[in-house]
Image 1 (spheres, rainbow, N blue to C red):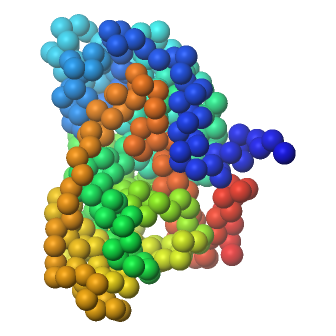
Image 2: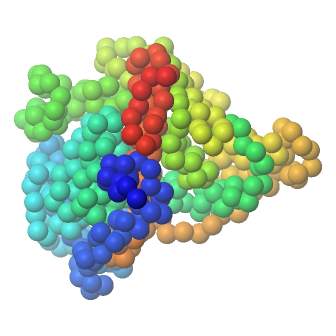
Length: 414
């Protein structure tokens, strides 16, 4: 039998096989139940502190973990995270401008990456090469080349990775997955989400920032140098250099749930269109405020995502099958019904989907740091959602349909 390369393996292996491989490769790194796990935070913005640090803090005593280092190119954000860690643990964490210092620390066993989108794969690859376990925010990558390099490094290192697609670790959506597996909807033809708002989310992130408080070069990373710009620095979500807008920013959650609920892995093709139609102003944001992406999956259904940031109405999240609809627009109370059924009578009137209890996303990751099992949103899940959104943005930029070859790990026009 021909031996597959690790590149071929990552592109074609099942989730279970990848999980088993990661667990086996990292078994020797397992920490004892009484050993403290030191965590380093890379990216101390609102997401890093308000979501990641706060999410771990709920479990830090029971799981014997502690934030021992923080890194951010913005001094006020870095100091705020450090002050919070000292308040919780009674010790000063080490502060750094650069991620490089954090991954080099012996006392850091794992890192949580809440940096800007254009920095994710650089930070992941550095952590993997330092053999640090990782929790990383979505989208995992902005380019296919950086995605493959980072994921190859992570698999080779055998680290535990949890992607920040936390919706799959909720009782409601886990219940949707279990019900979907029963075949209650019959043959599924379309899955859609419309996630709208009255204005783009990046406006809310803009803050006052002083040049003397920022390591501008560290923020830009591999992007071209230019004079300090506080709007680009704090409102980076709205600029294509640093983020690709709603499809990867919000749609990655949707695509990840499509994969989680249905068991699909990679789309076969995608088309994508959009632009800035409402929010044209002095800030010069380059991410689209309206966008639509449509993927076709080899399992035989179409997946559609759209964002309208000119009007907050019309939100939806539904799976359409021949026997009825699973409606998940209320994330906390999804329902299933026979609405629009091809064959009437298979489903009764609207009924709630029964939740399935599970560990929250942070607890799942913390437990896996010791067990060395693959977390709920492990390496393969992040790779899959990233491929889908990268395909979509290539279609957006080129105006041409994009197809994916999982065996070759290639995206091309087709």
